[in-house]
Amino acid sequence: MLKQSYAGVRSQSAAPPLFPSYLANGDWDVVHRVPINTLRPTQASVGMRSVSAKMRRIGFHQSNQRKFDRYLERRAIPVVLGPRRDFYMIDRHHLGMALHRAEVAEAYVAVIADFSAISRASFFSCMERNGLLHPFDRSGRRIKPGGLPKRIQDLAHDPYRDLAWSVRRLGGFKKTAKPFSEFRWADFFRSRIAPDAIEQDYETAVRKALQLARTRQARALPGFAA
Image (cartoon, rainbow, N blue to C red):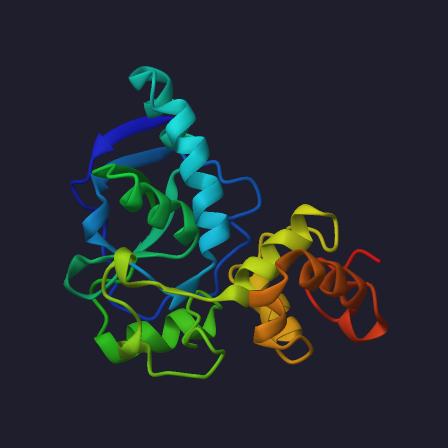
């Protein structure tokens, strides 16, 4: 894998075609090291339990700088270059938030595509059409793309995103390459488990979510495993 300081790639003036399933293995030929504060989210929320778990792993690897650099390189954040040549991250928001909270200044990114030459409105339309934008707030309500956080540290906490993360870790559904697939599970649980239940007894809420993940109503969700 070739590492570079970001110098830019060829721009496309027309709306791009549909994306391939590039997230299947997370392996890219060239990665760039960029400041974390330059990353633009394409979703509004994360689960803070998942962020905390990633922070613990980051802390474990930070004792050896060379190994930590390799750890980050293997977890390059896929980005699309958008208007004003901003980096729009299309995956690994939890990792980005964990790195920010751990006061890590830079991360590796892989520029999947350069859409910086198209208009802002066309950019957001194209991103959503290709499933690379999740314009919904932490309560699952739709928002305008321009209302998404401008910085990784501005991502809000969604407890249902944590619930989906915990259920997947326990085998309730399979991880898929489709971006934002766990938000579909979070919304599925959101309509069936009260927020007070998660706050008061998280483990019990996880057990209930595991049961729901194996029901017929969940069959259409990505990664259904029952």
